[in-house]
Structures are given as C-alpha cells and as structure tokens.
Image (cartoon, rainbow, N blue to C red; front, side, top):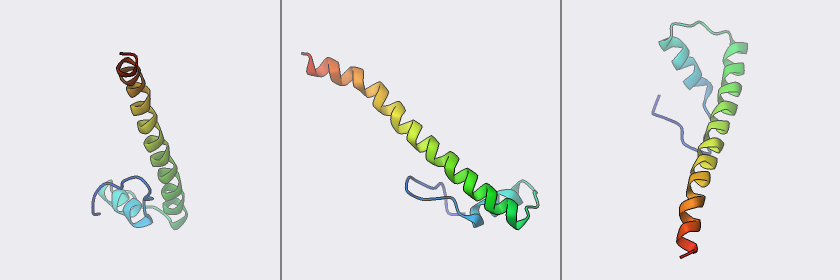
Length: 68
C-alpha cells in the first residue's frame, strides 16, 4: 500500500484486501469487489464534500474583500 489515494484515483481491490488483512478479515471475492466499489463511492463523496466545505467557507471572506 503506497499511501492515501488522492482525487481522481479509485481504491483498488489490492488496497481493500490489504486493509482487510490488517484487520484480520477474510473476504470472499464477491465481498472484496463489493467493498472496493462501496469504498470508492464513499471516497468520491468525501472528496466532493471537502471541496464544498472549502467553497462554503471561502465565500464570506471573498465577498468581504470584494465589497471594500
């Protein structure tokens, strides 16, 4: 496992299997596929929300600067 995936990268099945092994979980092929898909969707939502969070808190300071 090289590190944390950044935006535009999906979690791989190998990463899911690695995390499962660290947690001492035995996954079937179907479960590994399912968790890879689900975790990829969760990461996409987190990335989207973190961007929305930044935009939300940047609006007020920018508006104050523009209204001077």
